Length: 142
Image 1 (tube, one colour):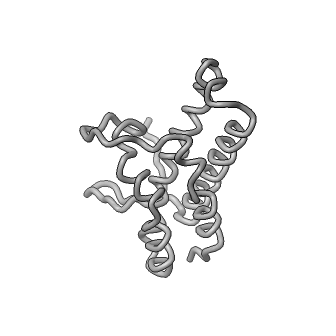
Image 2 (cartoon, rainbow, N blue to C red):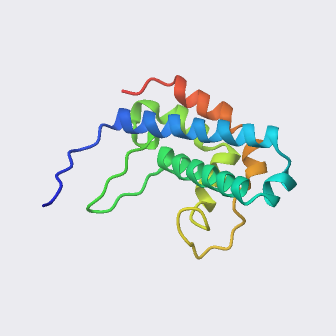
């Protein structure tokens, strides 16, 4: 039996991706506050949790800014909402967003052919990503 899926509501989808990104980032902040890098690396459990949060965060950031389309698939992203174009382009131009988008396929979501250095957890946690996600949350999605 084939499952019939209706068109996704872009407001719900984007708000969920944004919420998930903020939650993953907050958990990474907490891990970095509660454990040293050495403690995380010495613990298989903590390493797995950190990697899962990091990977999930990178994927959600990608969803927020995706622009590609195929003949069978159109992505939902803030970049596709005309009324937010200026604000989203300003946020998208920030270094941390650009690096995440440009390197995410290197390891995170796929095994990319590029050998670019991926964004580290430290780099993410020491960036202005949290502030940028807050700015997105304050935008009015129509």
